[in-house]
Image (cartoon, rainbow, N blue to C red; front, top):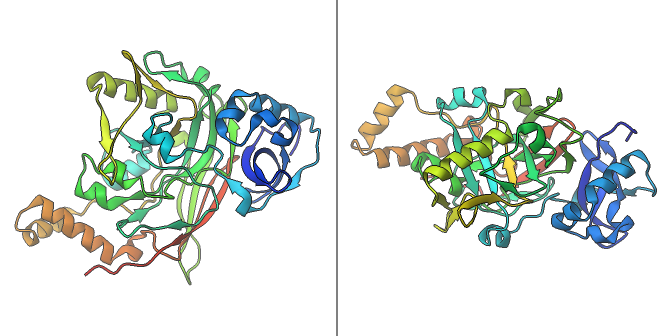
Length: 376
């Protein structure tokens, strides 16, 4: 860490405090933190959760310590790293936090999916850490990668008065995320399949650390970041699946919020179901206003390199013939066909290791676990 380094804030299980704490990353190896200055030990008001850190001067203390450290760092292992923003299922169900995903936000991803329409999705799950293994649920038929840059709101945002990107960026902190997606629900239902596709346990690994937008102006300054995802299948060499820059993002976070405001104006009751058919709104309604509370997350979209592909026209015709011209049955057949070829198509399977990195925001490394299901 140098005097010019932006403050890199992580949340970790502190050995010194024997409790979760916030720290300032001092040293890292290939984007993985190895030591941190314990900020919570310097100011107990920062507590163990993001809300306290965000409201009790945590960012100011982090910036101060980045320039003039007043304590010795302590070692940090990947097993100690926690999600920097701790969102629970209770937060989601209680409408205290929201997780928005902007889909089709890179031209390269639009080309590979052959879709050009803006897509905004809501997620209904807890956040997990950057190095926690992910255990696939039996119903996760076509799990796929989505490496991207995420951001957390540091203040409430009124969707009726969205600030310009330069001002909004001062109210954001950025982090690495892989917005994992089970493609099967989307193939089966292109209207209401998106939230079920993105809401399995473990599907939102974020971190390892955060950097505030005041120190990393990705959109309001000349600070493009590299987004990269490498997948290693058992017995094979690592393969770079995604690699792009944030300059390829079509809608910045302010424009994502503007799109959400537009959709809510057209449909104030806008919501979406999860796998359990519980419906989740896209924002908090307060009287005649809609808000996104501080601590809510926005995922800015993934570049090309995912596994999802639409079938070619001849294949579509063959599917329809096999399905007796039932579109619903044709979609189910396509999911089954993809499952049979999951490894060849690049879908994630037990034993795969995924490394997701965003320059200046660190690197995730986690393993896919579970029982491999062979479709009949």
